[in-house]
Length: 442
Image (cartoon, rainbow, N blue to C red; front, side, top):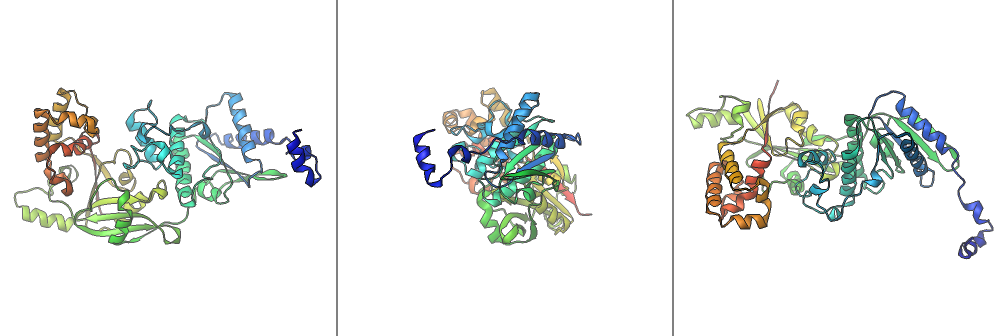
């Protein structure tokens, strides 16, 4: 035995070997029992939680489970092995996966935030990195397999832990992957909603209990809000500037009165290319004044839905939309979402989705870019855009596009002096056509 160890423990009068924890003889049997309990219903997507104070043997049991799964040839994914590349941007972390599929997983993990996509993983917060590790694990896991999560939500503030735990529970149910998580926080069983709980205590046999089977993350209250509520969360939205002509604001309030989300309802715009899909012929005609009066009388538009990043994954966006649809200001409601294909909360709240077809101006610009050998997404690359500035044909066609879609360009950008300053907007239209939503009050 090392002399420093002997000198360190000498004051306690106990031999070093007596202080080293004995082998966990029950770990093998408990691991078998845990896996058998998950398998007894033959239903994928179940969740087990191993919980208890530090030093109680949680990680040891999870390690034994890992070894048994490996020995049996079972398909399993360990989040400990899903380490993001700290120098690579969030959107580029899973290079082998199509961009749309990876963005879908990021959305499910609560990371489909335009502000975060170009940020290197090493610059993300601890909560954001936890969600990224979860997204990487989701990408590897397969239906009928297992996902192992040690120290689940242990390093997160409890507000973020609520959202991450809810994401894990929802994803397990949808994907058909069994999740086995280990964590010390006493609230984890309530937040995660496991089907099975294994409680560990030092020196005491582990206890197996039936879990609640559903996450109870605390009540979210939806109520009337103010412009100040919108201002508090506006920085989390990808669109700059305030929504036009707001008529009503709802807010979602979490435990303790903390603002978790906000929804803004606005008067409708006079022109909308999507409106003919949702309400064919209803808002068309030669008398613009009569059409405007009918729009204001019958229709409102959900113009913003913003959720605090800590609360993503809890279904707050859906609840805000549903709360408004239950008590709308007008018989008809519409919304247009650039992220509708990745985060379809409008549809989950009961609205009908209408994929917006490309406008003639979009098709023309896309054809011209294709002929010039330019991918639409390259218009987001400053260096590539700088090269395009000298191309007279590209400049002309981008100008034609801008004039055709002028009404849909955000007001802060309408006064730009160089048409290439609108290149990011054109890229968005060509790469991610928006989804329109409509709903009529019953």
